[in-house]
Image (cartoon, rainbow, N blue to C red; front, side, top):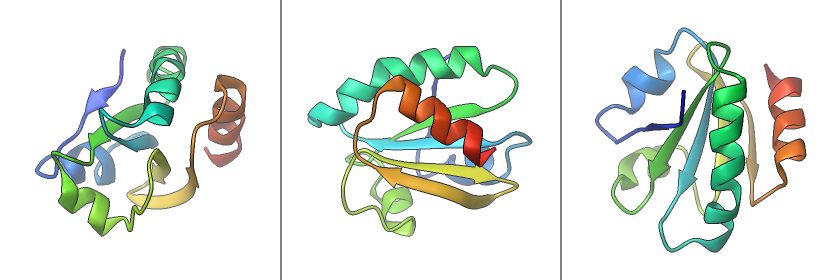
Length: 106
């Protein structure tokens, strides 16, 4: 399973109402660090298939979800569990660091 594109309209259904934990990546096409972590998030989405969902929210196309989460810089990553934020971080990180953060949070 690859990452899931989430919009303002689908945010609640895909993220807050998910049966499994969700890693949400707020990103934009023009963001260099966002592009750096993209492949790692795709790999993690496949490795954790069935355990977590990795959702990507394009902040340019979906400003409401980003504003609701108080996103001021990207990439901004949040982990939702049972509809609540359990952890968040900002900025790019290597795959191993992202994996460790996910493991510690779920």
